[in-house]
Length: 328
Image (cartoon, rainbow, N blue to C red; front, side, top):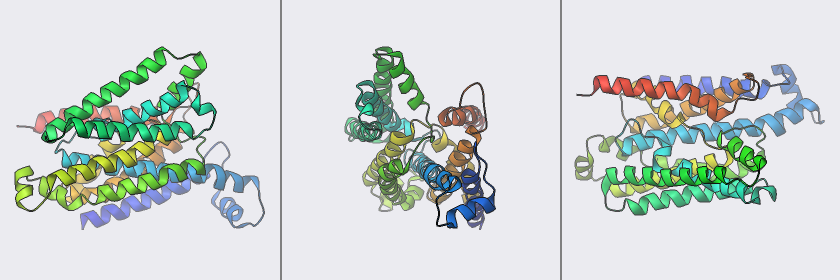
C-alpha cells in the first residue's frame, strides 16, 4: 500500500515539475498561453520556446534523472552497498573522458554530436574494462575494478585540462564537465533516448534477483538466482543508460545515491521494490534542480551538476554519519 501511494505521489510531483519546467524561464508563460500556443496551427515565439527549447530539455531531464535513480537502486542492491552509485563503476568518468577527448582534439567543432558520441563510447569502454578486471572476483573485485578504472579516466580528464591547447578549450571542457541541460535539442534526445531506454530495460530485469541477493549471494544462488548474470545486467544496463546520459548532459552526481535512499523506507527496504520509485524520484530531482538553475544567479549561470552536488554532498555526509551510528 505504501509503495502504491509513493508511486502515485511521485507521479503527481513529476507532473507538476514537468509543467513548471515548460512554463518557467527567462520568458515566463502562463498555462493558458502555453496551451494556446501548442494548439495553434501557426508558429509563434511561445510555441517555439515550448516545443523546440523547453520540451526537449524536459524530456532529456526526465530520462537522465530516471536512469540515474534506477541505476543507483540496482547497484546498491547488486553490490549490497548503500553508498553505491553509477560513478562507482567508472561509467560516468569514462563517458566524461570520451567527451573531453572529442573537445580536446577539436572534433566537437565539426559536429555538436561528437562529444556525446565519444562520451557514450567512453562509458561503454570503461564498463567493459571494469568487468574484465573483475572477472571471477566477486562483488568486491567489481567495486575495486570500477574504482581503478574511474581513477584512470579522471586522470585522463585532468591531463586534458592541464595540456589544453587554449584557454577556450579548457573553458569548454570545464563547462561540459559541470553538467547541464541547457541548449540541448531533439538531436540529443534522439541520440541518448534509445540507449537510456535499453539500459532501463536491462536494469529492470534485475528486480526479482535483487530481493534474493539481499539475503546473500549463496542464499540467492540456492534460490535459483544467477548472480553472475544479474551482475552483467546491472553493469551493461548502467553502462548503456548512464553512459548515454553523461554523454549528452555531462556529469551529474549524487542522484543515483539520493533517490534510492529517499524511496526505500516506503517499500519495506526491498531492493526490487525500490526500482520504479527510485526512477521517478531521480526524474523529479533532476527536473526540479534544472528549474532552480534558471533562477539562481551567482554572477554566472549555475550549472545543473554543481547545483545537485550542493544538495547531494551534505546528504552523502549525513548518510555516512547515519550508517556509522546504526552499524554494529
